[in-house]
Amino acid sequence: MAGLTPAQVAQKLATALLDEHLLAEPVVTVSVVEYRSRPVSLVGAVNHPIDFQATDRTTLIEALAKAGGLSPTAGGDIVITSAPIADHPQQVRVIAVRDLISGRVPQANPGTCRDNRPVVRHCQLL
Image 1 (cartoon, rainbow, N blue to C red):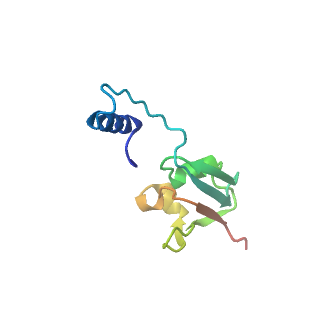
Image 2: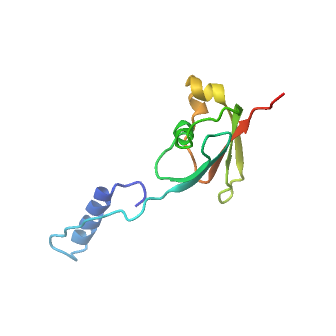
Image 3: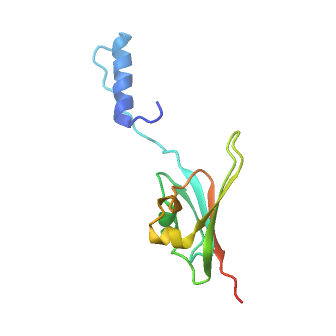
């Protein structure tokens, strides 16, 4: 029953109990004990590197805010790696910080996925 709200699941269960003549007037309550969350780690040139469990669609900007923002040594790119899942290999994506901050490139502010690891590159000192 993935993708349904607790109320929708309760309604489906009540209907099934009624249809099968198991209960005359079923009253069903569904409570969520644990939402499916996904681990996200944000490391590199951020003020407070963090690991957290994302329970909803968390964007890269929101993850950066949780990490206290970019550090003064942040470079121009953020590298996002995603852990391999089933038959899908590890994915690596590079986001330009200027595109992320400007907001003009929506693809630069992706939602986090399972086992994302955004790494903010440090700028090179000359």
